[in-house]
Length: 399
Image (cartoon, rainbow, N blue to C red; front, side, top):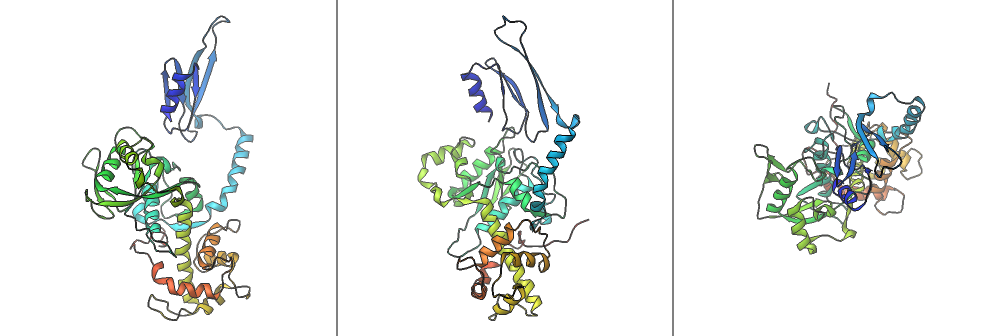
């Protein structure tokens, strides 16, 4: 970040520093050193000229400017190679995880460091919903998810309306190793931190939040008015899922001071939750429910929450195309496509593997009728608490 570059400029006698990482452009002189950062996504590039007036000159002359990359014709050989490299993403692009509810459209992550964007709110809402679903031997009960804007990384201005949230989008927006933890946070501190992050120029700490958090935009910065869908209680301690390192890294001063003085409130690293894995398990759970409902139609049996007979063997017969008494990843991939109507690519089976792992209640790598019977006992917990059912609701395409 810029503060680190400033330190480099001060501590070393470099005539120029070419740097990156920050999303915005920087062209400034720090104690005689020119600092140049062209910004994110290769929208701009730096043209730099370093020259010496004569052989006796002790310092070079630095001339630089930023230019838009799109103003230059692409090299045809490199362009072809670039397109070939991006072909590897096609299976991810075709793997549907969830339909995007209309309340989050148009889905965008274009200015996640400068505003609460719809992609940031969507991912935080998905994560909160996922962490609040009871699972085997686990229940979190969190009130809010807060993620710094720098953790929503796709920088895409707008996804098409009526499109689905794909595996490619998930991997583009959230790093594969990004994790969160759960901390107790007083209401006054939650509000102060969010409001502080929404002040001034776009920074990595611009806080994104889930659908249950509300702000009054008539104030500058906007004031937090709601948490978990209810009016903010400044005296209540909320359970908040967030990136733990962001609580003490100095980007939000009031949080840094509070949690530096109360480190006993921070969870151990072993309690951290990987965002991608959490959401993939959530999608898998909801998709298994949709497969469950689809098999109900096939066997002409209404399966409601009150059913006693869940027809485990009949469901197994619908899914088990090979007739070997088990359900494989390939067979679940077929079910996602043929029974549920999801977009899948045969070259990418990550989602089907997550569904298989979820159904495999014993963890032995094989799904049998016993696993389906186990799900009969759990079906009440599988249906979402949230009326909007983020990860499972299929919406009609909007024109």
